[in-house]
Length: 278
Image (tube, rainbow, N blue to C red; front, side, top):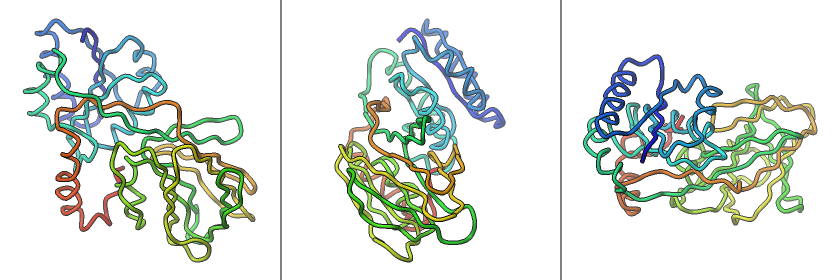
C-alpha cells in the first residue's frame, strides 16, 4: 500500500490523537497519507481516487458516512472502533496500531458487503445499512409497496425499512426483523410498528426491485443510513434495489467470527432492541 486516507470525527480528542499516531506509523513505513474530517464530505471525496485504503476512526456511524464518501469507488475500509458497540468495525485503537504494519504488507482478507440504491425522481442515494420511509409526525402513515411491478400491500405503520444484511443488525433488528449473515445479498423489507397490512418481515432475493409510494397526504421522510434525510410528498415513489457497487472491508478475523461477535454485542445491548447502529 502506498497511499492511505484517514477519516475521523473532528470534535473528539481521542479520534484526533489516534489519527496523529497512525500518520506517524504510516510515515515510518514509507506510506503517504491524507486525513479529513467526516464533516467535510466534499473535501474527502476529492481525495479518495488513488487511495489504497481508508482508515475509519470512530464507530459504526462513522463507517456509514465513510461508505457514502467512497461510493462508487471501491476503496477498502478498515474500521477502528472508538465508539460504543462497533458492530462493523474491526479493531480498537491499540489493536490497529499493533496490526497495521502487517496489513500494509498484504495481510488480512476482503469482506464485501451489499449496498442498496434508492432512487427518488432524478436523485440516487446509496445505503450500506438501510433505506427507511418513516412518519415525520407521531402518527401512522400509508405506504404502498410493489415488488417487481406487482402490488403487494399498503402498509399503515410508522414506516418501512429496506435493509441490507449489514443493516439487518441495525434499525431493522430493533423493529423485530431477522438477522442475515453479513455476506448475504438478500434484502429485508421490515415494517415499523405496523397497524394494518403485512406486519411481518419479507426476505427478498437480490434481483428484487421494490417501489414504495407515499399514499394520501402523509408527512414522510426518506432516511438513508439514518444520516441523510429527504422530505417526501404525496405520491412520490422511492425505488429500492441492490446497487451495482459494494463496500469492502479489510479484515483479519475470519467470517465465522461474526457469530461470536453477534452474541457479544447484542447481549450488551439488551437483546438487541436498543441498538440502531447509528
